[in-house]
Structures are given as C-alpha cells and as structure tokens.
Image (tube, rainbow, N blue to C red):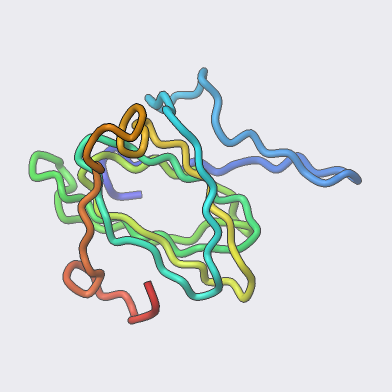
Length: 154
C-alpha cells in the first residue's frame, strides 16, 4: 500500500468441518482504532459504492465474503506525504482482509462477484453522532470527478 496510514491487514480464516471463523478486529491490535458502532452492508453484483470521505471518521472495513471487491482509496490530506496518491486493490472471499481508511481519504468499493457481497464496517464515529444528533461526517463525490473508474451503477 502506498497511502500513508492506510492499513490493509490480511485476515486468517480458521476452517474446519463446521465452517470458518475469522477475527476481524481485536482491541489489542496495532491499529489505533476504537469502534463506536458496527454495520453490515450487502452489495449486488457490479454495484459500486462511494466515492466519499470523512473529515473526522476512520472506517474499518472487513471483507471476508461472500463476494470479492475492488477497493479504491485516494489520499486527499494536503499535509500527507502521499497526498493525491491512489491505492486500488482487491479483497474479499478470495483474499480476506481488514482495511483501515484514514480520515480525509476518498474511498469506495465495487462488488466484482457474480453474487451478492457482504462488507462489515466498524467506524470510530457513530453515524450522525449520539442519538442521531449531529451532522453526517461525509462528503460525496462522483467517481468520474476524481478517478478513472469504469462507469457502473452507484
């Protein structure tokens, strides 16, 4: 990975006759993250999400399947040594990983599978704050304005 503070951590699947188990996050891990909430999203085949960035929030996406995803992250922090650099990579069922996205980095992902894909997120801020009392910490942008990603339904 090129982007400063971006962490992509391979996840180990413990597989046996019952199925599998994956540890997606532990409080004793090296990532400086304290999740405030958790949500799961499912994306239909070909669906792309993003582009968006958070001013104060870090996202911690867990890609373990079902499905495989293309992830794109663009550093938009003017004080970062990797300002304007792009990371474009693949994770998911065939490459289980957790992805810690720093603040002020444009990001999004696309389900590249022929089946519905699942993503877990453990952000370090609550959506709209406690009791939904704050403004949303999210800025959206059309992909074509910041990155050459083949047009597909968002």
